[in-house]
Length: 116
Image 1 (cartoon, rainbow, N blue to C red):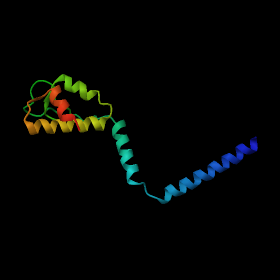
Image 2: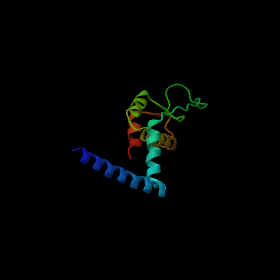
Image 3: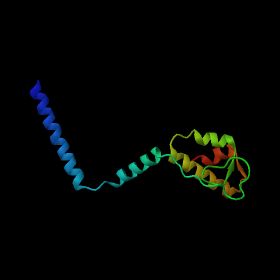
């Protein structure tokens, strides 16, 4: 039994050596870079805070924008578990609010604008 374990270990080490040799010869593919970038965005919390833009008075705003919204919209955004998806939805809703001239984003507007 001890001999079979040693043989399996040698076979595994040989496979790992081949994989390491392949990785050393080739540069990472674009999908690897994109995947790592997405994972880092998910794992690293957003810590950059900016002062509110001039003219924004009273009430919450969509994160990273000067577009006013209701507390319910903030709550719904918080329920989106993936940070980059939450950011995409926020940007889409903010763009729609600016295009339509909506003074405050409410739940009905949010649901309409956030639908892809």
